[in-house]
Length: 98
Image 1 (tube, helix red, strand yellow):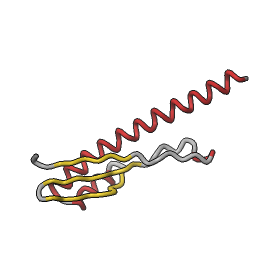
Image 2: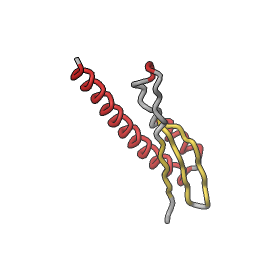
Image 3: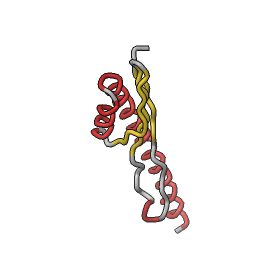
């Protein structure tokens, strides 16, 4: 019985780590794409690209021809019914000629 509990808890922790890592990678890819869109077409385009990639544009700044963005994605909702919430993974990116 104890062994089953240990295996269940270990499996849940491993799943949470993998899910958060995957979400962080999704945020990084979305930030890169949104940054490129912002550098080419402005912050409205960056928001559209982020949304198309299931991310939310949290910040967008244009400085001349450079753009910097911060996006976040939803955290995996595995422990929500138990009262645990995971933080929203976020990532930043910068795009421009330099």
